Image (cartoon, rainbow, N blue to C red; front, side, top):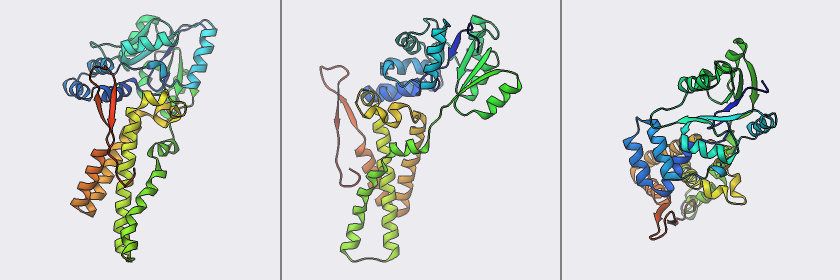
Length: 325
């Protein structure tokens, strides 16, 4: 990499081990869920406008967000060498400017506005206009960043992108690779599998009735699987709603989503999959059992209510049940 060219960093998944759009969504859901859902409905097809609206609702603590350690080391070396370090992101411009200021990076940032979503070719065009063809080094973490790497002097690839790396090498591009990504082990930590053991209480009626036929036990095992999946799906939602609080906590800041070990998007997909599994298995057992699982899941959601006369304050009502408490 050149010691004179500016170092330009993507934000979501590159400089940060998280995504500002998803952070805004979940922080907003904890503060003003109606406002978030209304904004999503109104601006679903206007991604750049949606980013701004969610950022305004969320009022994110960007200073708490996890920075990729490998990228942070690169930034420190670049700044020590006197290079300009610039953030270029498809996230909302106000958030990117705030992030740059907090980390003492260049005041010049490239980011999305309500008029333009700065991603892919649009970002490449803005950077070339500012620095010239091959006048900057660029760090990114997604296939869409190939559009920018093609115009950069050097490419910093964060994470496992073998196809893009092979293409850049074939094009003769100078490449630096930094490890990234997530593991299923970290995702399992977010599911709290140790809590599933509570569901063995479903076996108690069978044991009390001295019922030991395989069919009955098989149905109970299915019930345990359904309730375990339902519980894990709600643990994920709770963690996503508590990102800021967890990052301020002495030990909870190490949780998979708060630390950035697992991307928020992966958590959302896991929540969807677990919810569908729980309800699907419930339907196999019977409509009554499916209704019970659905009721359990709906009651386990945290209901956040703004306290009167205290802006931004929240309280929770937690219904408690025997299973998976």
